[in-house]
Image (cartoon, rainbow, N blue to C red):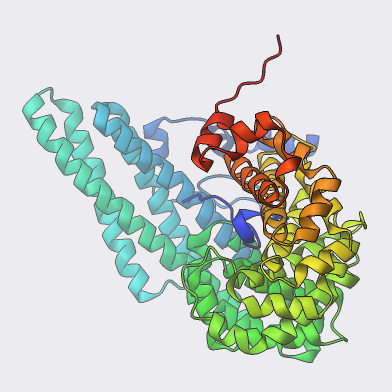
Length: 548
């Protein structure tokens, strides 16, 4: 059940910058001497602690459908917490227990293929114990829906059948019988896995409905905020949960909050959750149904909205306009509000108080410039080139390769328009582009390294597009753009071993050489300009730096 975490906002070419805060553990095991003494005195409690590190099948069988209550702060694979935080604890417990069962089932598949029958049976018994305990205790904590009860009953029967059939395989060495049993067990195991996944989805949907009802029916800012926090925490567990959350109506409930002035303090929190949910198509479809884009435009353009709310609204815009989404139906209604949204976003870039706010606003603008040229025209009218270059001089706003990636993406898309060349020259933008060509990661982080590569690539693309203008080409040559591009082509280390940067630099070189052939030396012209692009690429990509 465990799945990779998703980023808060999808930006061009997976360049999302900030990772949302991860959910905190709902409980922790105390390490105080008094607690340890308590565990030593209570033999049952100590036994359960030891059980977490044991795999004795006989011991685990005793726990079938026999839950043992513990203190609220204790942890254990076979315990479901209850009390004032039932919704949160049930959700986290479901996820933990689903992971435990899924791991056991996965091991069973592997061991079945190897014919390790003792271990197959042991895993079957463990899975049976966990499933029975989960079903019993979850039913005690919640009124289980009738449809889910049917699945539970069927699943328990299949688990028992799986345990029985694997036990039969322990008492024979008949290869023909074991081969036939292997096929039968594989079929039952697949059925159990599918049924368990479906049951967990239904249980999670049931818990999510509880949270959504809290949001919709409560007048307490604290209660609503707590429910939103729990939803946000769940979105970090992967697209599957985001899909369930969206289908249960969370986006609708969150936008209701964002349309009520009395909950203005919750706008940023609610919108952050919406942005996470909208990583899946179901979330975007729900946003479209409740005119969410119009609500986002209202928050972005409202001068009384706090910066945090406008920043999170920008995050939602960045998410729903991501080029990675296959569905683009929602973009039709987006075009109706695009003028207002683009205007508000460039103003937010100009006034951003920190790098995170600038990053969210610029990421939204970068995505918008991909799907409609009208956005680029609007940005030019709003003096966006000046604003972006000024921001690049401000370390408080543009402080990471991720922010620079967004800026150079916007510039690359603006450079398609002929009128952008003169404005970039006026702002001394060629110098800034050459600085982008030298972007280097400050750490060994793979994501930072990838962001630097994108900055270099898009800077070269922008330079190539702008060099159609003779004045830009002449300015670039005077500023030593050619030696820098040649170094990037010839030295893999300079371009972070990126082929995409190499192709972009070769294209930029050829554009400059077309306008100013004398700027390229004969040897470089022979290798980098004269051959076909693919031949120059192969030559440069196979170069090895010599340290002899």
